[in-house]
Image 1 (cartoon, one colour):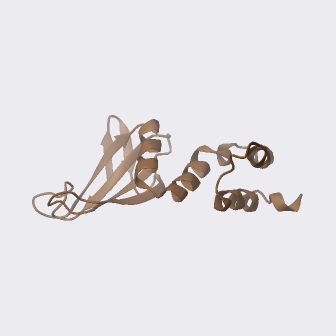
Image 2 (tube, helix red, strand yellow):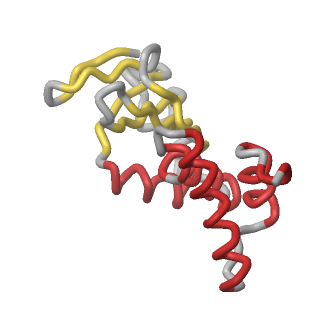
Length: 141
């Protein structure tokens, strides 16, 4: 789907898909699948798809809609709608060490993050620590 909202082109074919979640319907409304995207310009939008019994319906037929969302709104949406462990992985990949442009710097940041977490006792779940170690080849030290 492609649309323009407030001079922002929202195109599900060209934007980066971040994560999807099924939003359970209430009352007589059915479930809606929402997908969070980021445009090449760094703007976020939600693409919602639902059946004829959802808020996305158009004239009694299944439908879809796109709405812009702020950066903060995108983080809140992920935390509210994605299972906790997956949300942490998504936010780590999206906001965390992988956004640093230099692979060497990213590796060093990941290494320090893991060391500081172990020292403080506030470590991420094992799956996140393993993903960081694997992604940055930290076990090879």
